[in-house]
Image (cartoon, rainbow, N blue to C red; front, side, top):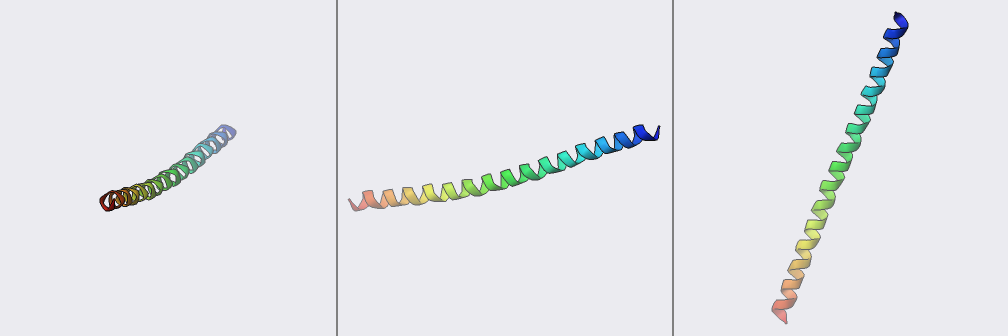
Length: 58
C-alpha cells in the first residue's frame, strides 16, 4: 500500500510542477506582449504625429 501512495504523491508533485512552470511561462508571455503592444502604440502615435506635421507644412 505504501508504494501506491508514494507513486500517487510523486505523480501529483509532477503535475504540480508542470502547472507551476506553465503559469510562469504564461505570465512571462503576457508581460512581454503587453510591453510590445505599448512600444508599437507609441511608435504608431509618433508616426501619425510626424505625418500630420509633414502634411500641415506642405
